[in-house]
Length: 288
Length: 228
Image (cartoon, rainbow over all chains, first blue to last red; front, side):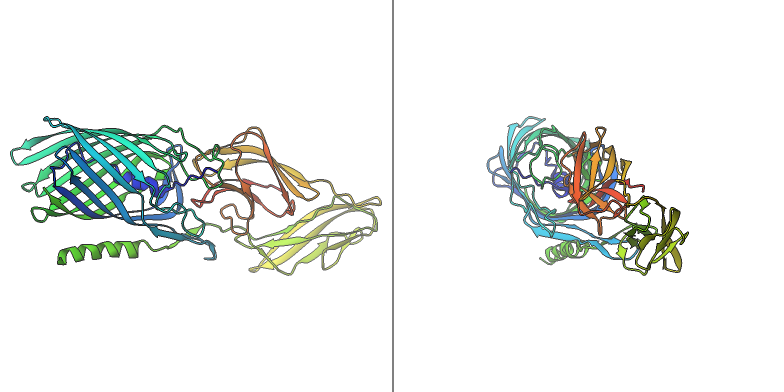
């Protein structure tokens, strides 16, 4: 029997990752590593009609290690590992008597790990790169007392992404960059494939100690996967998620290499996705 | 190292304190109700019939309470303390069940005729409309029919439900906002067109609402009132 597991947890992880990063590859032997905490708590979501409905309060927390390493000057390896992922739903109680109607639940464990190879196709003033990524289903697909919580989607996906961008000066002391990407995500186990695209604009301030960026990220579903109507399993979870999200992030270099980051993102349009902002904080080491 | 410890500590605070399971409260207040659950159209002359009633509190949960039975005309029908009827003479009477709950009288009545030699109970059936209470598609007409073993929920051709939500289930409930104490009929596997559910062991008057509920996300999607 076909079994699909996909909840808002994974949707939100998708929003969180929105693998952009631009077309720039790391120089051989250089690396960037980041320990981050990402979370969201939401009590409403976008329905399949794009309108917002309430839901039981749900929280998702991911503690992740993100690593970019320059294998060669043109080839960069990327690992994103949410090594501690927590997903919970609140208790539902009677507003009249306080009686517990549906007990809450939580699941903790490893999330799905992304492995990516990014290759620089062009190193001109407008560099272009191609990335091939694999979503390893290392997460838990059925946790909690009702088995409706996940830290992973249980499917092995493969995606290809093209990035292009350029750096420029807003003023002599204010560098900036803009980048765009587009890609395809091939998903298995009955999940719909996805078309992804995004834009990112960043600016360096305070003598490049502070980098501010904003991202526009979109996932459009091909809606070619299973739904509750077509799947034979009784444990199918949501599919055909779409969203357009906007994010803001600040990265501050405390030293030449060590820095902290803080960010937020939210879907401004969506289907079957949480309608609430997510937040992230992190500490990074940038061995340039 | 000290800074790193601080940052990790901050992560831990977020993780352990913000990620606790808390409580969501639903508005499940409803009117207390006493309902006569058995029915009879015609009571035989000198015939007997046992009426039954159930009390539902302000969240639609059944509670055992003392029930008083009363006949509007004891020269036509008498009723004893347990709700047992006796057809005294030909005519009509109204039988009322009542109880006192939180200082208020709660009652239900039925109209019964006395005639002939046999008790007559017609098959009960009602029509209604399923409506969405969300932005997910859910609509359709239905017929709720009493059967010898329970009830049948017969859903019409114009029924349509979104297949985007996983784990959609249909229930019979006495609270339109809660599935606490509800009877789970089935997982929804038909998302358009006519279909029906045979539900054994459930009385025609046992529940007030049909409720559609998405189990994995704990979201109510729609309902229908069983207007008796």
